[in-house]
Picture 1 (cartoon, rainbow, N blue to C red):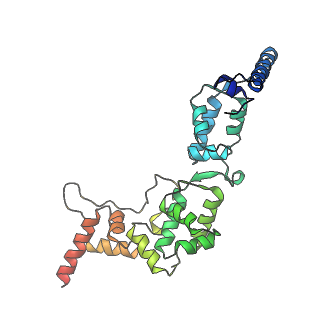
Picture 2: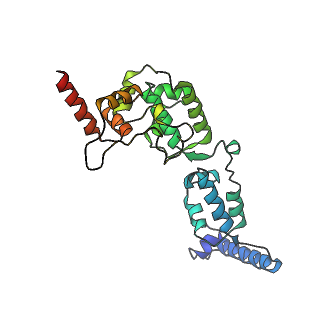
Picture 3: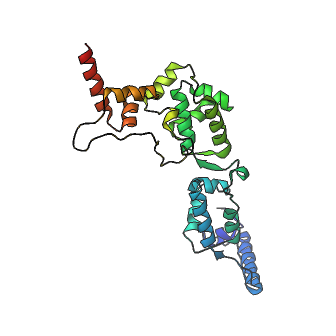
Length: 262
């Protein structure tokens, strides 16, 4: 508890001289503003509408809070529950601009960045290599984004990852160990994503064929599996995702094919 504040006087019941002086000062200021007609609170609906617009543009609630200068999302969440807020609070939120050029240090959902880093890992680029190319001193930063541990990234980070992805998406990285680990995790190659939709969390690649036959067989053949491999899908999990069947189905078809060949 800090003495000499209105909070200490009203919430903690302190009646020391500094706290009493702070309470008297606040009371005098309130009477003055009331007499002059100074607006202390304003309608919160414009704040709520602006937050809704920002979220529709792709910003997460946490990103909006951080961009507005809050250390967490709690303050903004509290404002969203109120019918009236302080003018300064409203101005702070309305100042958050959805245009990327004005918000280089703002935060945005990391889905697209995660997918791009995973696709580059499938190509054989190690986390350390990607971090160096992105100018990060610590590879753990890139690792956290690629693994999904980091839910949001700064716009400038997203731009850097996107630019690097454009350079390397069709070039092999040469690190087979990184590629093998990425494939074992079920990470998808660049061809799995539509460039215009890769940043949208609910996007599913347009080329995914759901060939499963309800109530019957899988409906896929060995030729389908071979075609998926040519498109960059390597593991049974990736191929199954590509063809719309379970991994076990792919493994069963491959096993049957091996038995016939032998």
